[in-house]
Image (cartoon, rainbow, N blue to C red; front, side):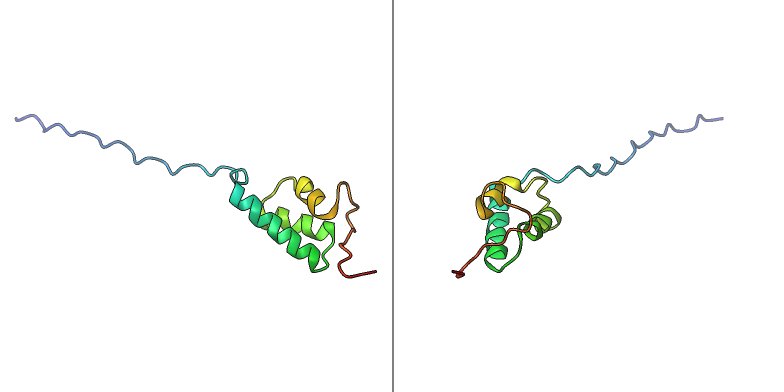
Length: 86
């Protein structure tokens, strides 16, 4: 009897890359988040509202420095900008 031909096993397909955490904000993302924060503040949103929005929509883990720039350092979560008020 003739020997059976040799068969080369195919290597398994590479596994899909595992998902990783969202990358750290880039300059462009930071600028977009800052613009949205300013627009929301001018529109009457509170610091807490802007904080929640930046965390949920932009993935900003700690928006405190950005919020300090917009609302004032260590301002209260209920703080709002008083645009046009006496």
